[in-house]
Amino acid sequence: MVTRENNQNINLPLVSIVTPSYNSSSFIEETIKSVQAQSHQHWEMLIVDDESKDNSIDIIKRNMEKDQRIKLISLNQNVGAAMARNAALKEAKGDYIAFLDSDDLWLPTKLEEQVTFMQRGNLAFTFTSYCLIDEQGKDMDIEVQAPAAVSYKDLIGNTIIGCLTVMLDKHKFEQIEMPNIQPEDTALWLQLLRKGHQAHGLKKVLSRYRIVSNSTSRNKLKAALRYWRLLRNQEKLNIVKANFYFGKYAYNAYNKNRGNSSTSTSLLKGDE
Image (cartoon, rainbow, N blue to C red; front, side, top):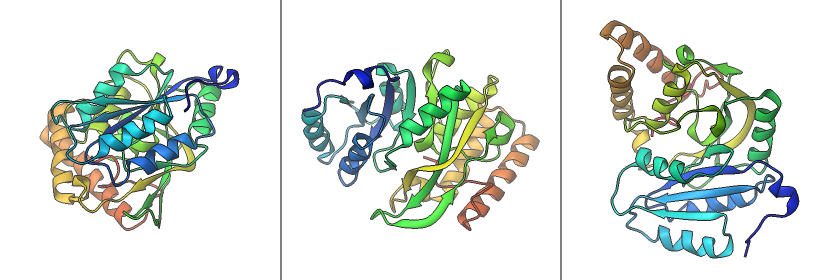
């Protein structure tokens, strides 16, 4: 059982990993193992079960018994990904906040390289490149490359930031809370960037995003409608500006789905 960190790890910054989980029994253990394999070992993994109907909780508890850095938050009603993540954010004790969904994976040096990147640049908000895998975990030969930097105006027409790649310095923000509007992750990034922050990209693939056949983010029409509501309801854009930025979003999504991912992203990651 992992009950404590060695002295070397304690001197490293603590990373709080936020993982919402709903009926994730097919993938959650592999996701946990990708966290346990990290070269940066000073972390806590806050898994929020959103009233799953399968045996996800049993799998999580089994792993908790072996590793006390894994913590389970069980919700008594299904509230969705945004509120589930917020439940974890309220309990997070780390210096840095990282996000990892229950079916996605990290490469072993993800936390180490990203923490170093943030510390060297004194950065508040970073993200990385990532690749796509299919439901069975096979590489799909598609990479989403992170640009060097993203501002509010860059992001509003392009969901280039993959949630599974984001790391935030908790001490540089007054509050980190996902709005209850879809796509909730992009809604948060826009909220933070609107306040003058900039997101900095680490141009290295450090995460693997799983394409799951029954994922709501795979329905392109619904994803587009959600993005339109985000522009109108959260960002309060008038109809002319909303149409302009929605057009950019659609163009970038089209390029991404053709595999032209160096300048765009998608109706995939970031539309959950």
